[in-house]
Image 1 (cartoon, rainbow, N blue to C red):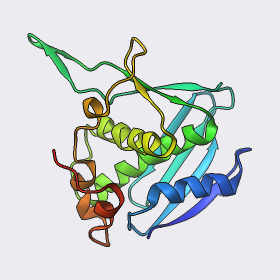
Image 2 (cartoon, rainbow, N blue to C red):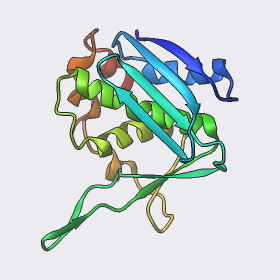
Image 3 (cartoon, helix red, strand yellow):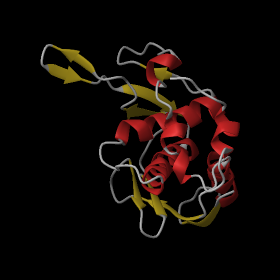
Length: 184
């Protein structure tokens, strides 16, 4: 099991946040993570993962209204001739706790990728999928396409995210117990 060195300077409840983050780490054993939750200066949100000291910063905008439509890069890349594009799918987050959890899970996956000794470049979509998957499973949030239609899970959750970072888990097999075996 992983542990968190946690500090929160926002008005959000420490216990509620820590409980949500601990739940997100359930099944992963990656040693201690330093986590700081604070307000951003002006952005709606931001997150940062510092690999060297296993530190994650979650920054939340004070001005953000909820529900918040998080634009994500979950969709498969599509090509038309020589051009490619990826539609933005949205995930409706109901409060600042869910926004903080999405950011944390996204940054945590960056840390898992680095710890697994994988190439850390161009992993934003995978990190978004990892975070979205957790919110869909925990809160039943719907992923929607640009027209507002619900997107079937198999259209965005098509990668073996756990298998990709399996070497990061210091206690082998825990992620398989958490998410079950998946075929891709």
